[in-house]
Amino acid sequence: MFSRLQPALLLIFAGTLAAIADAGEIEPPRLGQQISEADVEAIGTTVFPDGSGLPQGSGTAELGREIYGEQCASCHGNTGAGDMKNTVPPLAGKPKKGADWSTGASWPYATAIFDYVRRAMPPRNLKQLSSDELYSLTAYILHMNGIVTLTQQLDQETLPKVTMPAAGYFSSKWDKLESRIRP
Image (cartoon, rainbow, N blue to C red; front, top):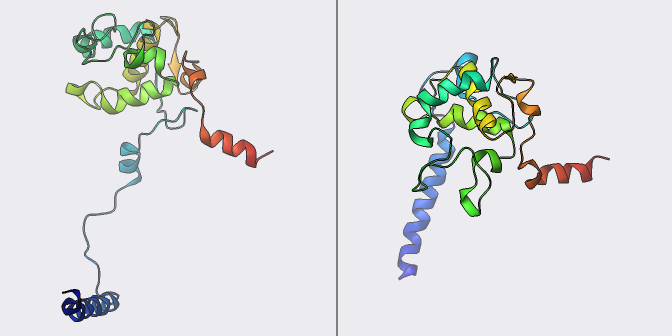
């Protein structure tokens, strides 16, 4: 049966090649429009462990406490313990076994908390918090875990310097490879 289809397949293949060869003469469609640098900056929001990508701004846990009460406590509880059904992860608390570890006890970088909250929280008010509110909220989450003081100011310089309890649990494959390449 394949032998009967072979000439037809070869004909289709030859036609496809001819169409590809002629495609160079066809102008591509002009879809969309070029976006400005400000638009790229607005959507390019990745924050790295070293603090690259952090916006201007600052905040303290003291300021973040009120924001937490308004934006986060309805899901994560007043103490950041999550819910009893394990559908909302705990933000604070002592380490437990398995997937029950709190954010403060299991995340290796404080900048990752800022980045996640900016991208995905709170679900009913997504991406509406200012940079100052995000720094304050991050500070409050860190404060609930005993990592920063109530009045310690976090900003582009200080947030990446916060040492998380789980920092030693992780290692970078890329750092290891780079150390072998560079003396």
